[in-house]
Image (cartoon, rainbow over all chains, first blue to last red; front, side):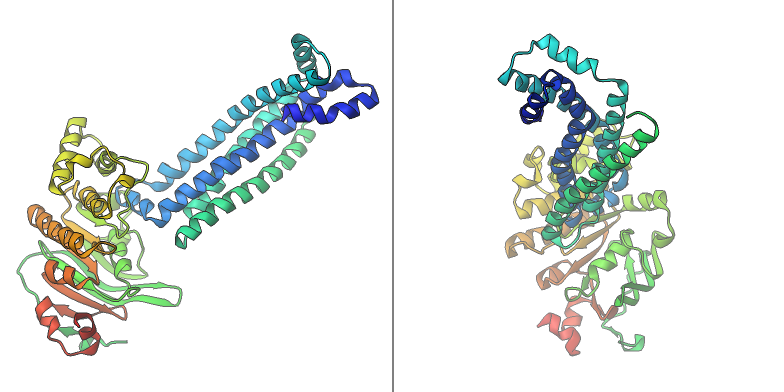
Amino acid sequence: MGLVLTMQLRPSMVDYGVESQLPAIVGIAIVREIGPVITALIFAGKIGSSIGAELGSMKVTEQIDAMEVSGTNPFKYLVVTRVLAATFMLPVLGMLSDAISLYGAYLGVNIRGITSFNLFWAQVFDNLSFSDVIPAFVKSYFFGFAVGIIGCYKGYNSSKGTEGVGRSANSAVVVSSVMIFVIDLLAVQVTDLLGLN
Amino acid sequence: MIAEDKMISAEKMNTGTKEVLVIRHLYKSFGSNHVLIDFNLDLKKGENLVVLGKSGSGKSVLIKCIIGLLKPDEGLIEVFGKNIPELDHEELDRIRVKVGFLFQSNALYDSMTVRENLEFPLRRHWIKISQKEVNDLVMETLEDVGLTHTVDMTPAELSGGMRKRIALARTLILKPEIILYDEPTTGLDPITGKEIIELMIEVQKKYNASSIIISHDMNCVKMASDRVIVLIDGKCYANGRFEELKKIIDPKVKQFFE
């Protein structure tokens, strides 16, 4: 993400004569928006579909009923654990993704120019503040929660055999992805209202 | 709709033993589809009762109501003197220790090994059990179904018949007093099906359990039943021993035995 973004921004930045601001702009774009949202979308594709398909197949093969008969509350055992894991792990993944993207951006900057490692990171961090990092981190929790709960809901309510399992996995990804954009939109509004933009 | 007075009873069963399960005036519908209509049933201690009926006649719905997976619209389902629809989760779990359920699809947990599948109900119901006791029980139950060598395998590595045996082992591990079998021979070849029926009879004797077997496999009905109920139009249409029901000339009953 960082590498591509840098290479695409570079020509315009050169035209305006602000090429030196490239690390700062890319850093803000990645930390505030691109890192959390793209990570959440990939997360929805991989984890949301996996949760939807797994719970869906458990539902249609009566494994959830078997769990209930075995004295286990399937909601707690299957849903709560997955939603918590998704909620708490997506922000961590988001941070990892930001770090990798920024390294990519460093490579991108150095493909057509020369910027030292220290200068690149100094420019990135000089232009970042807590008001950039914290809202992005907080909204990642909401993205994770949405992916977890939607995947579980779709899987848990799966029906009509194997066809239903595929449909659950598919709709878990689609609904989660749309929800990520809705949450992102709300997060921008809230951040703006709180004066953090 | 069949009137109650027209219900065919080939023989009034009276073994003199206490009922472990009593169902009275049970109704269950899904929208406009009335599956069970004023259904009545008694199950005695140690008895093997087969419920016979066409696909979609409500046999599986009946046993899911008994175990509390489905809530009936109306009626009494008394298991060991407790009315299932009125029980809260904790009370229902206590009853479920005494009632085993063998699912039609086996419902083995794919992500767990055979050992973990068998340990699952033990860990949930008997929290204070030690690891050694768990291991002993798992191996003892696997020995009952003749599959001790599969203990560390996953369900995907087992054949259909083996999966059915493991599912039966998981049902038996809590030593239930009532076992509900949902079409235990469906999807199995006749030889494996016969082996499963023989195994069911064997464990039923060993554990002195009562059982309700849902089936439309006549071989299973003949071999496993002490008594047979024919479920037609949501009601208990005929009730008696296999050989006696076989002689009934009523076409609705006769079609099952032809």
